[in-house]
Image 1 (cartoon, rainbow over the protein chains, first blue to last red):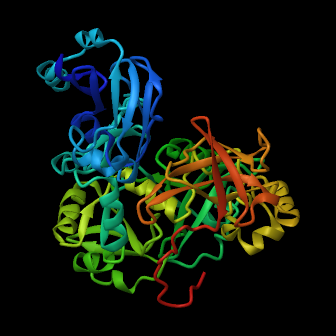
Image 2 (tube, rainbow over the protein chains, first blue to last red):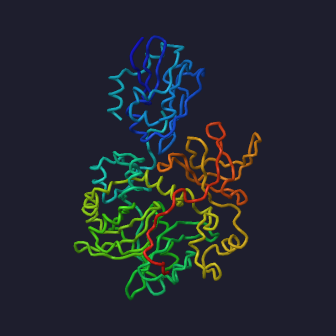
Length: 124
Length: 385
């Protein structure tokens, strides 16, 4: 399964085979405002769908990011650890959070596709 | 993600500049019963830095404004506050607090003695507390008249270029010294200006009729150095300036001495008393308070927020709780987290190492002098009272 899948809570996972790149959407970053710190999980952490994956600290408040799928953290983005504002600038590109090895690709069927997510955001 | 939707109590009122905020692209949020701008498209960090380098325009129309009038008004208001108000000269402003019977802070406020034969004080109080404040003053001082200024808006223009922008509309504001007040005629309307603010910068607080507020704000925004600034940056600016926010750093459980507001307790009042909670405050002045409000520098990059417990840092598994964070966030000017909170007096020395727990991890907090950034108030002469 390939393509980008979204949660109603504004996380995304971009999938290629059983690898997934997880981050937050442009809508999320625009709502959060200036991001000043991101706490990422350690590589090797096993995480279940819906569990806290990371914490975003914006100037205003702390927000949890929940994992859109289950899997093992195989890589974290050092760039956003050093420069969290990259998430504001390019959330779907350079501002990704972690790479997961998916343990249950069937979970993707329960997520929104891009058109479905856009409709969801427009109705907020 | 959690926490994306800001939904507190629904707003019940709109400020006079509501339409302007929306035209400027503000993100509006409920605050103290009003729909208020949290930030504009530039964002909190840019608005914060703009205020520190140029000039930020804040809408503070949600705050309470009133005139307390009648013979002996200053002397009578002293029965509710610890400031020397009787000595306050006309057109001078003083910061003080309304206290309860145990010396707890019911609100903090600005009081200005107005010029003229009749004795009148102009009061500015916090938005969230204004109804209780005005009810208290009216109940305790029935011999005076309290005129609540419901048709006036209030703007704050803050930053090193504020004076340049405001003097184009109100020539003469450049002659005011910190905490001076003056009434100006602006196109036939009475505009009251104090050289004061809550950012640590030079600047002005401007009370004006609501009907002219938008036109006045637009003229200020025409100036190339002036940008609109929302509540988000107002909070980060006052935190860098080490200034207390009512409901967070000060409330009915804190007294002015432990809050570090002893400077605002009048010399005569320290001896003579005559205000609520004098016994507790006198004891705190004589023997030192049990705890003190201090600055805290969290080590690392993660902000430590209001409510975090402050623990001793003695290497043991569980530190002893010695205080609590009351304000915390990210400092755009210093590009690191900063916080304030109360700690036991013995641990209030700058350099003391304490800690807190953040998401299960220990974070070191180093006690730091306040303010985090030096104040840049403009004193044009040796201040009179």
